Image 1 (cartoon, rainbow, N blue to C red):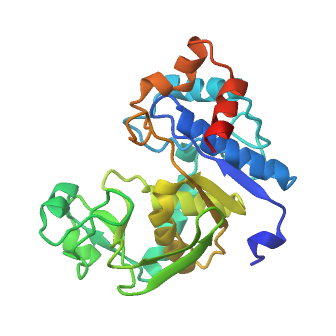
Image 2: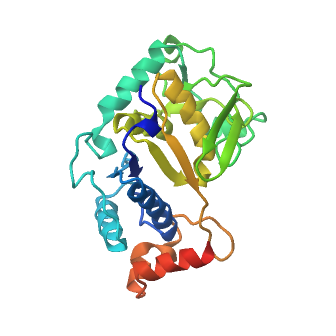
Length: 284
């Protein structure tokens, strides 16, 4: 497969409509757009709407409105079409099921009946580096599909314990994480029959021919997990560029619960996109 740097640049922004977009989203997405523009490339908008319980139609409508107000322009997306649709994740299950099938056939995943509560209660389940996912203690590693018939279970990827996963990030430089130490076996398919973030992200970025993934620094460990999926699925990974995270006045990372810094609240207060972008430049 052609390496990413030999292909026309294709970047993406992939908001999840589980709440209103905040200023941190805007800065990361703006960096993604600027990098696509600088490379004379294509920017793809993907609606990451797999979370059935939290994704709401009003958040989807607000997402489009807020992005356009802020000055985002994409060439492919749910409203623009394109050659690599659908651009709503809820319409892309065929890609996820095909990837899951390959992982099963190649022996990379196993059924796991442990709940998150079970894992958190385990004395041997420290948290992975840089994120809040507990490291799986391997309870179900030797289980077969027959063992879990009639149970509620997920599919979990077996990481190569002790292997160092290295990559060069466009922003943070050389990064490496040790499988089994910095992160453990991770879920690729959830018990509610929905693909987990890691699998959906890899399947979509590969199918949409994304050459560079721009996202927040909280996903650096996820990149190590996803590189293992790219390898298992025999896919060429994109380049990665992780952006520093925005924080509030007390140093807490911005999240959708920070309603005061949502784009629509800032707009209602009379802020303009130009003013907000200028404030980033002063901080940087």
